[in-house]
Length: 208
DNA sequence: CACGCTTTAGGGGTCGTGTA
DNA sequence: TACACGACCCCTAAAGCGTG
Image 1 (cartoon, chains in turn yellow, red, purple):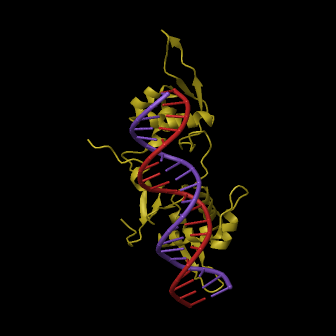
Image 2 (cartoon, protein in one colour; image 1 turned 30 degrees about the vertical axis):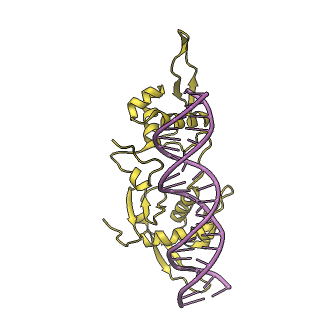
Image 3 (tube, rainbow, N blue to C red; image 1 turned 120 degrees about the vertical axis):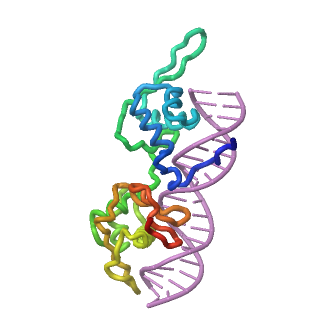
């Protein structure tokens, strides 16, 4: 039995429905049992204690969990018990191990949401509309995202781009698959986390 | 149980080149 | 000139292991 590869796995691998991964599984288990020890979670999720611990600590520091100090008996401490005190729903909170909320991915989320709201746009317009006080979306980033969503069939081109003129795109209503923004992965394939499908690859086949 | 270290990949962005 | 597009870089999340 060889050790599994270390490190983070690609999104399209971890999103396998049969083996939903990591944070979401832990969060669902926590919501199900409300008060628990790390051992309880380990039994319920089959996830190693170290991984459970990092997430539990992050949740505690971010205010989702309450920690009850272990009782001391026979000079030994019992296991720490944790209680869910801030249940925010089915989506697992994204926190670091020191309790900060993760902001990565917000840019794409804002672009995706904005596309749906404004309907049609050039990448310049999209970047402006998607920008907030906390996070300014760079036009280049909006452009990049548009290109890939166009290839993947989410966007149709209303007017071709040209000199001094950015292409105008429209989001197909039927291709709004859900609130989670499609991701462009390192390998340049487009992954839709809503449908859990690869919707475009550089090799060209987009349909399954 | 807390914490530090390591590894791999994702997110976000810049930059260079080709082109109309 | 401004857009299209690919190559590359930096930071860090996620997951695991080891140690005090």
